[in-house]
Structure formats: C-alpha cells, structure tokens
Length: 127
Image 1 (tube, rainbow, N blue to C red):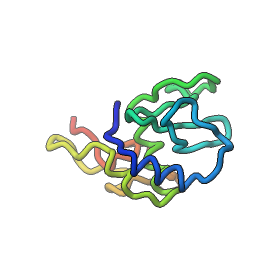
Image 2 (tube, rainbow, N blue to C red; image 1 turned 120 degrees about the vertical axis):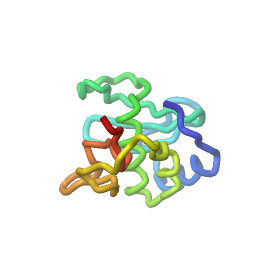
Image 3 (tube, helix red, strand yellow; image 1 turned 90 degrees about the vertical axis):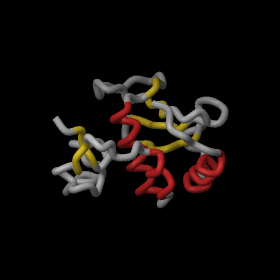
Image 4 (cartoon, rainbow, N blue to C red; image 1 turned 30 degrees about the vertical axis):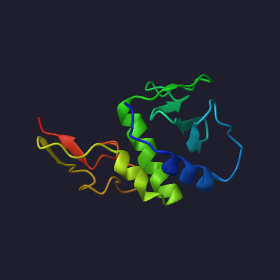
C-alpha cells in the first residue's frame, strides 16, 4: 500500500524523532517507529518499510509492510509523536464497512495501543 505523503509530513516526523539512532535506509525515508526487535520507516513515495514481516519473525532486511501492519504502525506513530496528520493517511471508511466492535472506532483497545481487530483503522469490512 502506498500512502499519500508529502514533504511537510515527512519533515514533521523528522523533527518529532529528533535523533539518528535509526538512520534512514534510503533517501527520503523517515523513522515511524522502533521497538525491541523491529523498526519501521515511511518512505517519500508512501511505502512503509519494516524488518518485521507478517509472520512476526525478526529479519534484518527491510521489506514493504503488509497493509494491516503498515496502518497499525502509522496509528502508533501518530499517537507517539502527536502528529495527527498521520491518521489522514489511513483509508477512509468504505460504505460497506462497520465500526470496529473491539475498539468502537477509537483505533485502540484496552491494554493495546493499536486495536488488533481492525489494525487501527477504526472499522472493519462487513461480512
């Protein structure tokens, strides 16, 4: 998935991160989040790169994140940095979707920074 990023958003992330502990893997990429065994970057062309594959197994190489993981990292980064514009990157609720019953649209659930049921979208596709 490619998110509609702009330079102003990337600059805001650079300022919010304020350190070079995790240098960008390529020109224009900005740190979104880092955790115990993983890291995620937002690229200037709107991709989320991570070393945390969908399988959950650690991998040193960076790969494009799957949609659910990418959205969950963006939601977490928005909360950690206070950059609410990150939430504007998440796809709008389609007509065929319903509010997530686990988080009631809040994007987080009790004891979870990002709702696992909807990956932070706040909505789920109706069956």
